[in-house]
Image (cartoon, rainbow, N blue to C red):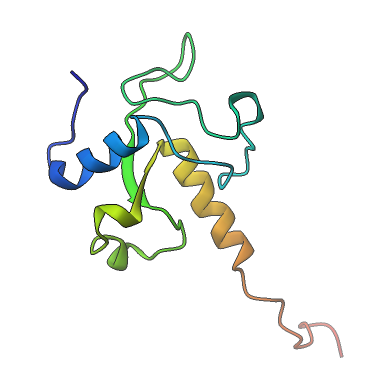
Length: 111
C-alpha cells in the first residue's frame, strides 16, 4: 500500500491514480526527461537513485504559475502529480520567464 498525505486525501488520491503514481512533468522543469520518453521517471514512495532520497508526490496545479490562493480552490481535474524537484524547478522557470522587462529609466550614474 502506498503512503498517503494526512490531509486532502480525497483530492490527492484521484490525481495519483490518474497519474499511475508517477510524476507527470513533461519538461516544464527544464529537464526534457529524454531518457524516459519525455516524462519524469520518479514514482511515489520510490527513491531518486540508489543513494537518493524518498520521493513523495504531491497534487499541485497543472500550470505552475497558478497563485497558491487560487490553487487551493482547484478541483482534482486541474491538478497533476508532481515530484518536489520538478515542481520547484517549474515554478522557478515560470517566474523567470514572467520577470518584468528591464526599466528604460537611466541608471544612477547615467546622465
